[in-house]
Length: 152
Image (cartoon, rainbow, N blue to C red):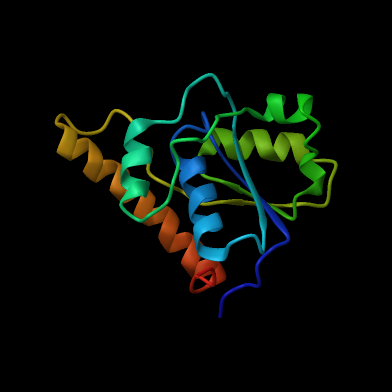
């Protein structure tokens, strides 16, 4: 039995360039605008990773316009973490940061251990395979938690 969709969810990872944008894109693709979805990183100094864009494109998920952002930038832009129903951390560092930032709120922070594909594989195809593995882990967690996609 899958959980009902939260009103709002924040996915986070280390740089908001690989795993969390994939998760954000999948949620929007699978469930439309039913849930408010954002993503952030512990740090936000990188651009969206090209391999993430490529493997999500294979599923019809558009990531090329994603702009990375950090928890600090979210705060500067007025996004209040306490307004999210759920924070899903996709890396140990982002889990620590999310717990630290939300310790005063009654907020659900979950950790999904997702492979970090950066730096894996020697060839382009091997790198793509590592990114597909991370993408498919995220997809599996999302579908297990919230069920079959509802968006058309």
